[in-house]
Image 1 (cartoon, helix red, strand yellow):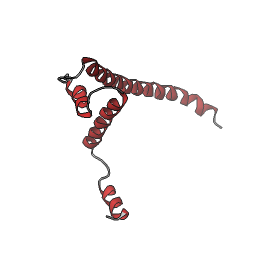
Image 2 (tube, rainbow, N blue to C red):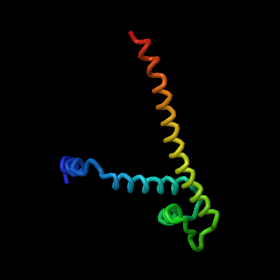
Image 3 (tube, rainbow, N blue to C red):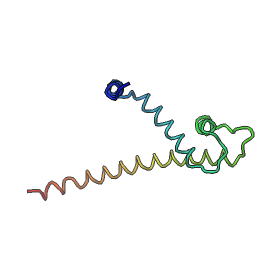
Image 4 (cartoon, rainbow, N blue to C red):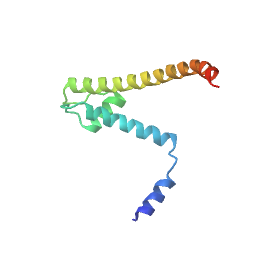
Length: 105
């Protein structure tokens, strides 16, 4: 397959559906949690089960389950904070806007 053909196939897939974007984001989040818990005995699939279903994995230490669950909770909290901070920053900029336009000549 030539590079041009590959590019045409890629362009044909755009834009991604909201469902596809959500699925990719969820997979990315699981991968990031999995990569962040060094020394943990959970596999990628087991990490996904802990995050999505909250299950413990038979034969694995409870500390590994808790570490994965806590990392997932932190990622969710971090996303929430980023969203809230972005809103606050937007409100701050909107409040500054009238002052900025009144000083323009």
